[in-house]
Length: 443
Image (cartoon, rainbow, N blue to C red; front, top):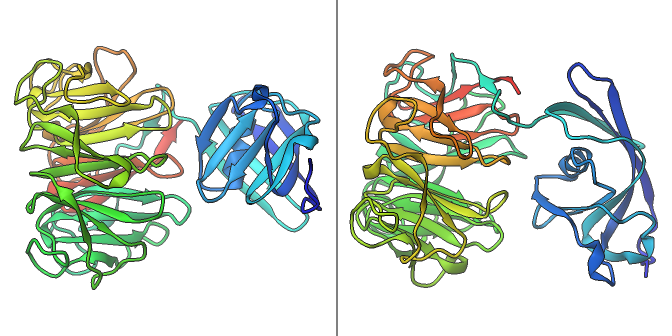
């Protein structure tokens, strides 16, 4: 039954223009503080995406040709997309955390590039959305968005020393960085870069207590905005409350020898940490308790149930529901199914052809990013490049870098690469002590 709290209907129009095509549009009716809750099982969402705001949820509906309705949940950033919700207003329930929408009219189709405009009675917002593809390309010359353009290290709040892990906050266009050599975690704005950073964890010298770090590597945030830090030098994982600063002490999540990069499943808060020392990836179920082995843990080796000095980990909860591991000593990327353990055999999805700079090789692979098509983006640190590896491909292509140096088109041990909300490529250029942005040029 529709709730009496649903007292306001707003009409939104989304317009999309594909390059070389005519403009397409659709009109949505917006129901504030409401969600779809059908009495039968035939109107469950056919897809669930995670996005930062309702505008992006509307755009997600636009890009799905089957979309007839959607519900956006603010607290979880979940966008449920339905294909059979026409005239189902009797299935609307009150929910102050949700906003729902019905498609009234218009045509929709998947697109590679589009401009979406959302109009209400008081505001009009325009944003550009680009879906990455095998043809996407980036500028070869980067802009230094933080740190020294020349590669000089330092300890003031405009400089870095060996940056490694990163986390990107899309709604606020902020970047968080594990400043390894300065034993601290920094936050800075990309809107006005280069800017002065803020210390959000430690920066109080070297030690292994709860108020100091020793060579922090990986960072991530859970669904409650708590910060997790993989402390390589201390062999432990720390958790800090939301809105922490340099005076905030962390709490010990658990001991992981030579903890490197870290990845959190935002749906469950399962926390994955690569252990170079133990040749394993550990999982803290729900972000607490004792760590259990999620991959490897059978001694150093090249068998499909073994790892050799893993350095990177990515749990892709959005698209493939799989665990990816940078198996550094075997120069390959491994893929494991959800719920994997030490007895699970993985699949080689990139590299595995010895150390080298060939298109089918990797050398000291670090972090991994996965897009909606299952394409991998790999920080190939030993080759000073970022590689794109299409799903089921036998070789990769170089997106940026490839030669060692501090010029705008060069990198020196790029450790982590991620995308911002415009799909510009952000790279922690570790041995150049800087953060680089390669602008997207072609979708």
